[in-house]
Image (cartoon, rainbow, N blue to C red):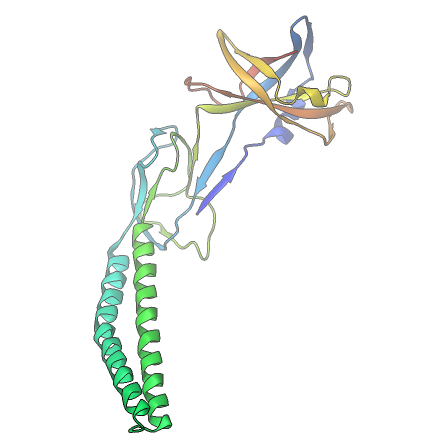
Amino acid sequence: MVKVKKVMRVKLLIPLLSLLYFPSSHGLTLSGFTAFDGVVELNARSSGVIKTVSVLPGQRVKQGDLLLELDATPHKARLERAQAIEKSLAPVYETAQLELTRAQELYDRDSLSQIELKNTQYRMAVAEGNLQAAKADVLLAQYDLENTQIRSPVDGRVEQLNTNVARYVDPSVDLSPLLSVVKSHQMKVIALLNSDQWSPSLLNKPALIKYREHKFKGVVSFLGYKRIKQASGLPAYEVFVSFETELALPTEMPVTVEIKD
């Protein structure tokens, strides 16, 4: 199962942010830290034993890359069984159709009783229901087989790997993610504003992020309305500045961000 959530480690790192800011003729400058703008958590959609794990934490991946695979043997067997049942029920349904057509003709010529016609209609309904159920079983078996392979839904980097080969997984019992992939080129800066700095006009303002000798262009993507209480007792409000980078930046790195006027 695929879950997308925003990475928010503010509670842990708020004490590290001292609401430093610097007067600037170009706008507001704050201190903050880096975070991934989004994390995709992946879990198995089918149950089974993990056969292969193809990635390691920190490894870059492309959309569609195979991350891990379950043993497909039982799923293939269930699919073949479902297909065989569907195949065996198809002629039963076709025969029931012919019998119903013939029964309707005889009934229209007063050569068949209403009870006999109803019995033929009943047999037709049973045959049709059985065939539709068999087709549904085929679709479910195909779905389970396809989901024995977990592939990356995005370009990014493996952040965490929480499983290993030979482990049995069952998503109906355990929904904890097997691994997570981050869009490593999409990041954000998390900083804090004091009461005097907070303004609704900051939202969507352009910004410049500085990390060591690197600079990135960004935009204010979130402005918090809920007050955060710091260890110092002073109120603060979150502000996120989203940016893109091809640089393999880690999270929780200190940066400065200058929000333009």
